[in-house]
Amino acid sequence: MLWLGLFFMVPFLIVLKISFAEAVFGQVPPYTPLLEHAASGATTLRLHATNYAMLLSDPLYVSAYLKSLMFASVSTVFCLLLGYPIAYGIARAGPAARMLLLVLVILPFWTSSLLRTYALIGILKANGLLAQALSAIGLVDPGFALLHTDWAVYIGIVYNYLPFMILPLTATLMRLDFTLLEAAEDLGAQPWQAFLRVTLPLSMPGIIAGALLVFIPAVGEFVIPDILGGPDALTIGRVLWIEFFTNRDWPLAAAVTIAMLVLIVLPVLLFEYVENRRAEREAMA
Image 1 (cartoon, helix red, strand yellow):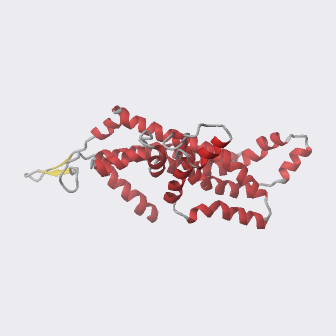
Image 2: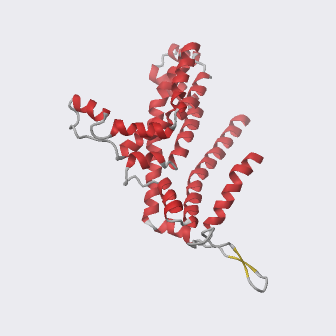
Image 3: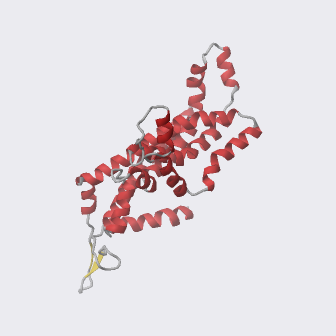
C-alpha cells in the first residue's frame, strides 16, 4: 500500500489538481492555484471544469482518443493471434528447448525499444527491405512503402509488445494438464473441439493478462505512432506531448491524462469486480 500511495496516488492527485486549474502563460507554474486567499483572510476554492468540457466538445481530442483505442485494440488482437501459437509451442516443448525459446522471446528487451522502432524505418520505408521483397515477387510496385501509415503503427506496436502477450500465456499453458486433451480425444472430440472446449477456456486467465499488458500501455503509446505513423497518426500520447511541451497548457494536458486514466482503469476495475463475483459464486457452489 505504501508503494501504491507513493508512486501512484501522489502523482495522480497532483495531476488531478492541475487539471482543475486554469492555464496562465509566462509564470511558474503555468496555472492558477485552486485555493485563493483574499485580503480579509477568507479562502476560496476555484475549480475550472473547462478543460474537461473541451475534451468532449473538441473533435480533435475525441478523434485522438478513438485513434488510440483503435491502435491498441487491433494491435492486441494481432498480438493474441501471433502470440497464442508461439506460447502453446513453448509450453509443449521440452525443458531445454523451452528455456531456449523463452530466451529468444525476451531477447529483444536487451535493446532499447526506441532503437528497435527506428530500425523498422529501414524495413518499412519506400525501397526498404519489405518493399524490395514484395516487389521482387510482384505483389507491389517498386515505390511501395508502409511507413507513415496505420499499418506501420500496428507493426511497430505488435513487434514491441508481443513478448508481453507470450509470457503470461506461456505461464498459463505450462500449468495446463495436457492429459485432458488426450481424454477429450479418447471421447471422440476432434482437435479443434478439444481446443475450443478445453485449452481455450483453461488458458483464459493468460489471455486476459496478456491482453491487459498489451492494451493498457498501447493506448498511451507516443513513440511508435510518432516515428512510424506520420502526421496523420494523432494519438492521445502525441496530444499529451503537444499540450505539455509545445503549448505549455498544463491544465488541459492534465485533464487529457485523467480522462485517459479513467478510460483505462474503470473497465479493468469492472472486469476485476465481475471476476471476483464469479469466483465467489463458484466457491459457494
